[in-house]
Image (tube, rainbow, N blue to C red):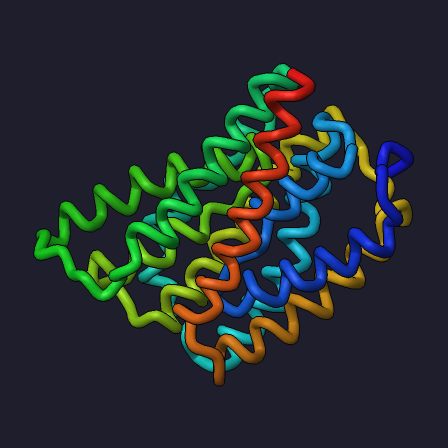
Length: 254
C-alpha cells in the first residue's frame, strides 16, 4: 500500500461508508473500492485482488445477515452460480494492460450510474417464460462473473434489479441473492489471481476491519429496516463522485 497518496486510515474511513451503503442493498462495494484505490494511487495490478478480498469480507457478513432473516433461496441463485463461477475464474486469470483495466473500470462505473438513475423502476415485471428467465439468468451470470474476476466489481448492482424485473424474488430476496452471488464470484476470481499474485493481508488490515464493520451494520439495517431504494440513491452518489474524479485522472495521465 506504499503507493497511496492519502493516509491508509482515511481510505479505511471511506471504505467503511462504502461497505455500509453497498451491503444494505446486498452488494459488496467492489466498484467503489476499485475506483477509490485507482484514484488514490494503488497499483492497478494489485487493485482487483484487494477489491475481491474486501468484497469477500463485506458479503460474508452481508450474506449471514440476509440468510439469518430467511431472505436467501438456493433455487433463485443457482442459475447465476452455474454461469458466473467459471467466468469469474477466467476473468481473474487474465493479465490486462493498465489502459484496458482503467477503461473497463470507467465504463463499468458509468453503466452502474445509468442503472441507478435511469433505470429506476425495478418494480417493472417482464412477462417471459420460465425457460427464457433461466437463459437470461445464465447470460447475466456469465457477464457479471467475468467482470467480477477481471476488475473486482461484483455485479450486484445489475443482478439485484434484474431478479426483481424477471419476477424471480422480492427486493429482500434479490439483495440476499446479490450478496451470496458476489461472495461466490469474488472467491472464484480471487482463487484465480492468487495463482500468480500474492497479497499481504496485514498491509491493509485497517481496510478489512473497516469493511467488516461497515458491511455488518449496513446489511443488518438493510435486511430489516432500511429502504433499498433510499440506499441505492446514496450508493449512486458515491459512484458519480468516483466517475468524475477517476475520469479526470484517466484523461490526465493516460
